Each structure stands twice: as structure tokens, then as C-alpha cells.
Image (cartoon, rainbow, N blue to C red; front, top):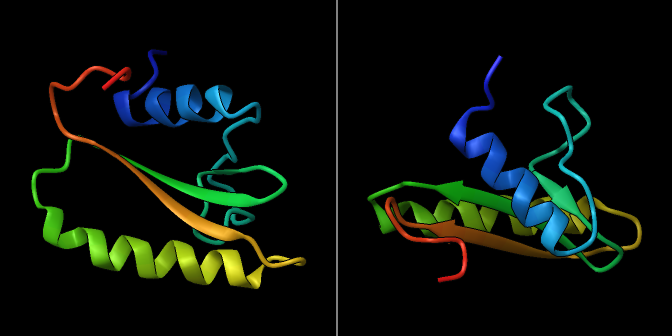
Length: 85
């Protein structure tokens, strides 16, 4: 079975910060991956940056629910952009 592009993107981003993607099993509480200080939400190929505010609100709340609290980060990559960008 091939990996979906968004899932592979989450996995690559998690690897780049030295952690792993959290599977969608109910434990994520809004975070795709996290490390000791940050919790991250990764978005791939979305065209409507107006959604960014909702994503930031969601991941900021997820960070605050952690113990100790973490900073919420949204990683957004527009369709067609390379990871390095």
C-alpha cells in the first residue's frame, strides 16, 4: 500500500525535527508530531491560507493541553513546492 502524500509529508517533517509522526488513533489531540518543546500540525497542498488561522488556533490549543505546555506550530507547504522551500 502506498503512502498518501500528506502522510509522507508529516513523516518527513517529523523526521526533520528528530521525532516521529503520531498515528491517527485518538492520541494526537490535534498534533501530527511533537518534540520536547513544540507540537506540530503539518498541512500539504492547501490553497486557502484563510484556513491558517483555524489551524493555528487548533494546534495552539493542543500545545496548551500538553504537560508541560508546548508551543503549537503549523508547517504549511503549498502544492508543488519542494520540502526545502
